[in-house]
Length: 168
Image (cartoon, rainbow, N blue to C red):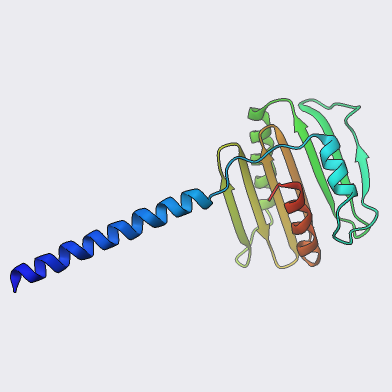
């Protein structure tokens, strides 16, 4: 009886180990790799040609007027009042700081009912927070940063655009 119990325990340990290893491999395979940073022209093209019934996004390109650490900047503003801000920063290190600072600003609106999602990988960081009335999202890819703060009623539409841009 003791030999049978030992054999069952050993087989159980082997099965659990195989399941854990297999699921780890599958998760690694399914895990998204690095993201690709957009140029301002790519950002403008996707924002203008989105197929999400967001008509007449007003694009403002401030790239001709560099400001400090910002090399290029484009804002895509909707008629509902929300806007997506897109920046190409002079360096990855400074972009990480811009991401962190924007996240800290968003966190000042945090309360007990807020929900947060964050993800950091090889070349990007993402932070999203939802409150009862707001949707906030910031994503850094290499030396670029995309940021948005909007009413929660526009969240679904904005998420679709963010996905099209690859900054989700």
